[in-house]
Length: 325
Image (cartoon, rainbow, N blue to C red; front, side, top):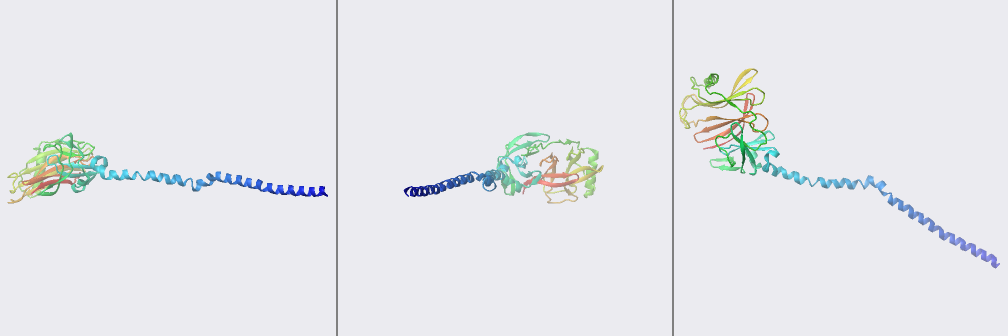
């Protein structure tokens, strides 16, 4: 009997030991199964978490350049006009800021003045070639009696100089040829135009003739000025007095004459303040390869410089500045 009880007790002990061992073996696999899931997280993460971090990170490097981009918009045009396409044009004799150009488009004096700080370097041009570099001040108002005019003080320049501009191109790609003022063909052309303007017997006094290919098409144009005043630099005008600027172009093998500027007096006027036009020269002032025409317009109490853009026989005023009472 004792042997029987012993066997029963032994069986019960073995059963109990087997039951206790079972949880140990099942919990271990559960631990090992959870570990592979954690290590395998990158498999599912690339679609949600991993790519999200690289996408957000580049957004920060993109934002900082916004500050450098904004700064040149205000500072660069003043310090280096040519680099940003802003090119001021100044009369080297009077110092008047005529205006300028930006990427080929004309800017008025009022439009370009706020873009200049006085750090600009100008190329000074004589009648036929560049004559050196000048520094220029920031524009400043002239004051009474020309309150709206802006002036730039250059480190050089004289009455004999053509123009000064802060552009990177050669403003004199083609140099005009001066023709004799007593040429019969041009004498007759001026006489014919003056008769059309009401002068029955005009006294022709051509002051200058220039021949040059304005638009680089291989065909020369002719510019000329003629002036006759009984009394120079006076407020009065006598009958037959005049000053004119003409452009002669060849259109379809036919010569056309365009009046650029004129002041003509068929009858005397006691107070007329007549204008005297002088052909200063030609230059490419906006970098498009086409030469503009520069004309001085003076009267007894002031004067101005005018820049005309030419397109075939068509002419329009592009820039101007001056002062007078």
